[in-house]
Amino acid sequence: MASLGVSRATACDMKISRSDLFDLVWSQPRTQLSKQFGISDVALAKRCAKANIPMPPRGYWAKPESKRPASRAALPLRLPGAADTVSFERDRWYRARAVTLEEQPVAPVFCEPVEALVAAAVDQMGRVRSISDLGAPHSGLSKVLADEASRRKQYEANQRASYYKPYFDEPHCQRQLRLINSLLQAFSRIGCKGSAYAKDEWIRGVGTTYHLVASIVIGDTHVGFQFEEGGKGAARGAMKLVLDTSKEGGFEWSDAPRLPLERQLGAVAQRMLECAEQRLRANAHYQYEWTLERQADLRRQIQEEQEAQERRRLGAIAAQQQRVRARLCRLAANLRKAREIRDLVALVEQRVAGNGEEALLPEFGRWREEALAEAGRLDPALMELDALMANK
Image (cartoon, rainbow, N blue to C red; front, side):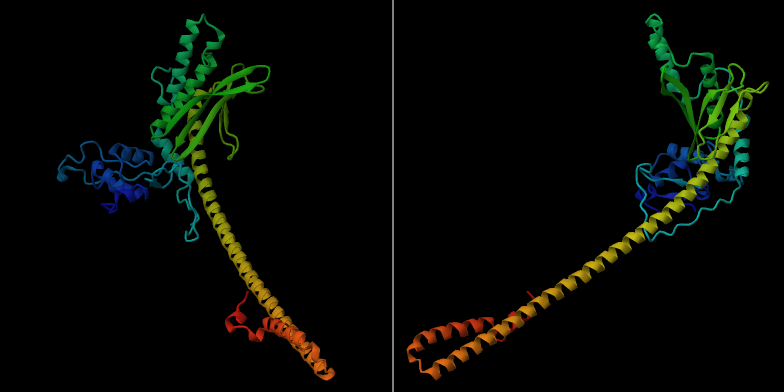
């Protein structure tokens, strides 16, 4: 697969498998390939790094083909928590996913064992060392440290007024910052981003307190963690690191004799990788089930609409039949009335002729004319055919 063969607009709305993107980045320079995706070569490199896709080293394409290595690097396993596809969709976080009945959802299948993915990521990450100072902190700590420096400056300028006192100058808070920095630095070696922020909490009788919360983006999955006191029975000053794992169950590490948290960071990192992969798989199954449920809802809505349309159709037919029936009944009643009027006129004619009441003939003539005219108006047999058959 040497070329995408698609327009820039289409490329910006597509997903591509890791293996296909791996073949592409080794088939042509990123400066050329990135144009096909409508992004910069730097953005393409970031996507490759996030997807754990090795790229040709600097100067690779400047060498003559004969001097390039005969074999390229193998595609490593994906990072835990990372999808097996790379997305180039625009506004992917803000665009609602539409479900159609034409879509054929496929149940997610994960061929790689979780243990193999985690082991490969741990090997790539290397040993998670505790960094004892914050001289060169991870960029994810920059906002917290900058805010602390600003508060410290105001604190000194205002005669150490408690309102301006930094939140995290206490020894245990400094230790938390060092632990966060150590984990962020370790995960940055496998292309994972991370950050920390100050979370405020109001406690009755105490007031507003602040504590540190951190999060690492492993693949496409966020795994957060924070610190708590050591708990009942723990040594004075002991600390506990807790993962934000409400779905997977609680995972925590505490200071222990001769085993402080600084020496448990490797286990923490490994568990975070496992949690990221478990969340990815759980989310994939959720999306699959959600799609099936949404399609079932769509089918139910379509069926309900069809049934409603059928009820409306049958109702319209019944209403039309009722109108026709009512009109026919009116016409039949009018026909009977017209016949009865004519019969009445005939009876009166016989009476006038039999009794010799010639004096009544002028008045009878007028009455007879009006009666027969009314009978003519009522008699449907005298109506025009179109008016007779009109269903009004």
